[in-house]
Image (tube, rainbow, N blue to C red; front, side, top):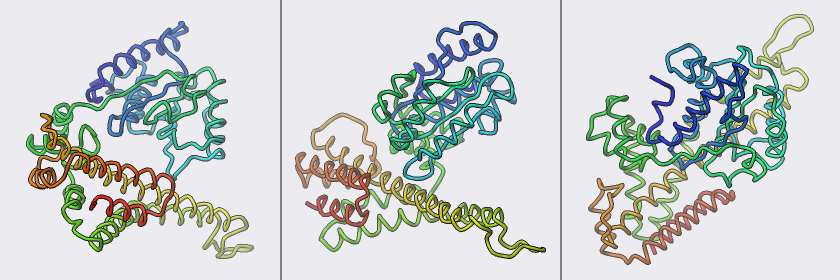
Length: 390
């Protein structure tokens, strides 16, 4: 299986990347390699597989056969262990200039196996302005065999000076049928469950896989879709907001607890805590307290991002619910993403007007915007719930 075979519904992008991989092989052989460039920008809506496409392209660049999918080079690239592939995942709310400069120094090294040095920067839109400026200089003057693969939701999420120096690969939302086929054939999901998950996820591949395989994810979705019918009074609005925020906090805590403990323990050992012997003590050596504080700040930022992402996923579920209500109100012949709760959709469609539904969608989108501006989550979600009650 070639490395690009796993990209669902991305025929145009596959064609571009396949030609570039061939050109990259020509460059390695001493040729001109028209069609290959040193900087690429992968864009597309959530769930379209930006990072997956970038990783597949990295494997194709590192593979002597252009991405055969079965050699050691491909395998190492796809699982992230290849020595010439540097993967960057901003864990906090942003990626700092200090981190970017350290990354640029690592990117300047020559490839260890003679082909390419590949830097895969996931969520490049999280780079701060100063970090983006530092990144721009590295992209403008890259080493001969270094390739930058940047991922972002849209080209406008990056500085124009950066995106103008990158070749754009725009991914699309795959059709639900294609996603269902992948779940059924590669994950052995029963076809009925696969079609439900693909429809509910609206083409978001990882979300569809989670819905198909994780009962807890399905339970959380049912809880979110039950919010509209529960907003019968002000007290119920406040309770629903509190429950939604608390769920996001619990999810963030569960996702970070083990990792935080491991990181803290390793750092304490690095700075000598618990060491014994002449001239040593059991406390942190000089500089350890500052490093520990910096680690704690990063961990808090990571937890905040996970909490915000969890809330945002729930808000998008609400948007899809009201979008289905609007479709029913207008009699649009489109497939409903939440057909499994058709009774609730029909009840609300009959009890409200399209104008009211649009105002509710606007309220959810406003809440997303406020959360992005660091408004207190409880206050932002409470205001949204009151607006949804109308």
